[in-house]
Length: 110
Image (cartoon, rainbow, N blue to C red; front, side, top):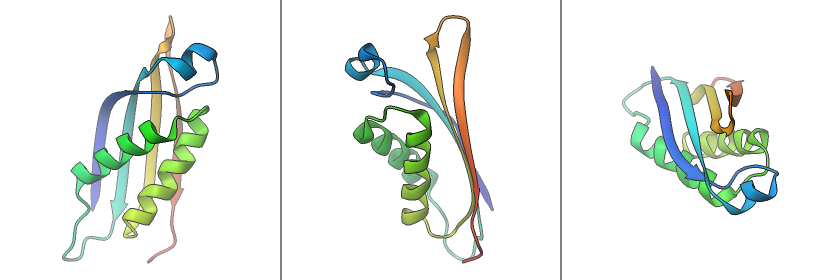
């Protein structure tokens, strides 16, 4: 089974620059989760809320740090995850482009 969350958009503190540490900026998160469905499911609303709360509480300096934290948090809360792909995009940080980083993980069978 695969669930996906596309364009989860919210504001948070993320970045190294002084203005990024003081003023929340818009980020966009995409997430794809593969898991073995067997009479229980992964609730995408819970996944979306967990992503948002982890990002807002973490106040990360680097997108890469945020991705590692999300990976650990999601796998802990949803142990049935077999594959995970998360992308964090900062659409407003540079004037002529949208920057992002992506983490992909495949876990051993549960």
